[in-house]
Image (cartoon, rainbow, N blue to C red; front, side, top):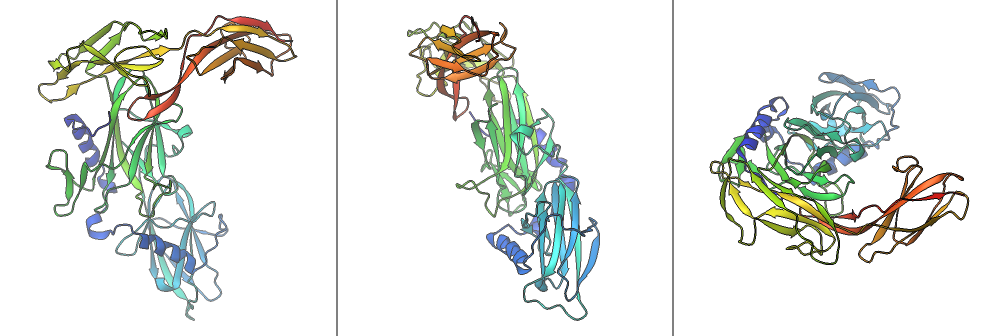
Length: 506
């Protein structure tokens, strides 16, 4: 179950995160306007006014010193002036162009020649970009139909960079996911050219996790960040976006909590995403990204910027232990394992959810009913006792997973009819959807191992070494959809491996 957590300890931790963010905050109430579609249109028009055509590398570009004002002049016949900006980390770039801006056209491009429009504009004319580290080019030209005075057109550029101090810089794909530090707050940054950050974590056993994220409030609208949970194969499990749990209070200049009806904290950071649940052992991925529209595109009003994150993993206050965790399908009801339920001594017994037994059997597999163990699938063995902490009021909840698997696979025949090939036939199982065949050069299936999944009873494996001995085994699998949280994930449930057969390849 996913829910916004009201845990005192977590609030304290988040308060520490907020208190540490001072150097990066902005006086949003006094100086910044919300992003609108007009801002995006204005940015495009600025680039179009000069018909700026970037070559990417922009040979001869002058290095722009951050934090210092650079003076320049356009003269008749000048095709534009180029400046190189080097960002050594991700963060916010502010550019203020001074002069007769009605006659100037400016654009910001990366090394690949792609243009990036400012995401926000301040009252003093500053253009705000959220960018990842790298080299960029700022180009100034005369606007279309504008005339340069005989004395030339003077301008000034001031570029200020505020590093997001992100703990990780290159975790913008799942393959480059960063290992999330547990119990320690850290900064991340969503840039216009890197709109997602990925993190990974591994649970050694069934555990309760909390991932909290706070984003900066820069106007009266919430940030558009989304946290998404994936399994080890990158399949979607669940997501949580901006809740109505907290919002900016225009009158009082603080964040209002709908959960308890009082003021949570003051300050610039306050939009809070609380993402939590109980997950079984395994490797998972978290993606923090900018919210997209129904077409999968980032809207022009999307927010980018720095966020503070904190993740903790807790052992549930109640443990559910099983004498064994799986059994093979028999076509009949399977006897439940012995269940042992232990609780933290701080939690008190209140009552049973019902009077049937100390535990309940709930199905995790789509199309499979709970209450008993019979069909192939995964089941939750859930405590049937309500435990409650007398001081905090927190409930204690946990479960264990029991799996009903297909029957053991069986190899009917294995032979080699052609050079470099092996033919394998398997026994049909009516309750399975397919068969996984493994072939290797050794009995432990470590050398030159090959694995194939097939829905056929016969398979030909090619590309083998002629004259060599191979070992073959098979197991049945069932295709299911499993609810770990609120979304069903397609996966295979495998039975036991068959006895090993051998064949000498022709």
